[in-house]
Length: 292
Image 1 (cartoon, rainbow, N blue to C red):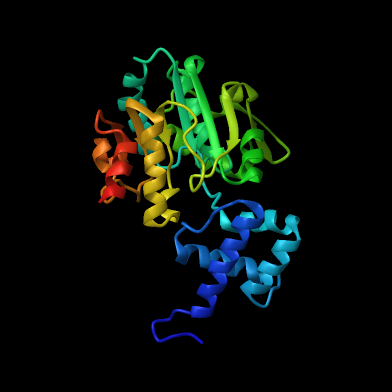
Image 2: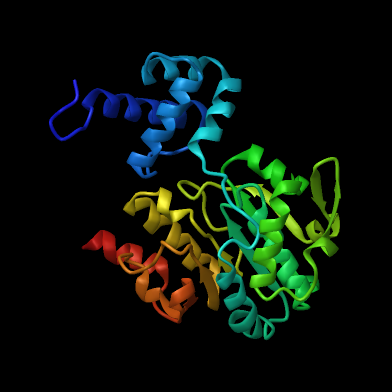
């Protein structure tokens, strides 16, 4: 029965049980994802698989690992484009890169790299700015199928006009076509762009920091998390960044309500770029929060 406020308590229970089943059976934790968006995606999956209810979907998913990996395509968002929001990349190019040049070596974490468009955008930008040879890119995502696509670097040719326009608007110093070959309705990015990239599974809901970074770019990922998981992710980004390192978020994301906000300073607030300050260690903030 749908209640007066439009909520379906049975669907809420089924969703909780399904997410717990995924966590226990496959060790992926989606419990901290924004519930409204997640339920809409699960409903599309239920219809696609022809299940009468989420409980029926859960039953099939528990017994069929192949079905679970198909379900992952609904649970994770893989929509992006090359140089998405070109002003962000122009800000990186014009304002962040001069600071990055002061580091003898660079590590860049692209958290939630999806199908790789963000990585290739940054790899091309760093090549154009002469930083490629001193940079190691960590491209992570929860979805292994997306990581395979990212590492392959193959995209439909019909997307190229948008990619090219975005690259030009970002201040690109070369032609985007210099970096790929085209044929049979697709483009393949030059494999040399991947020679300093590591593609790896990483779950912001459960995994920890794995290196020190000068730049973390995680755009349009936090919007799919609830407040608790947003805080966890921001804590990871803060712990990963060296002091003076940079964090780039999506256009609808910010640090304003995070308990880690005082560990970052506005650098280019219009483009949601922040800088790690010399504030308290984040693990000390965690201790303070728990004590409170």
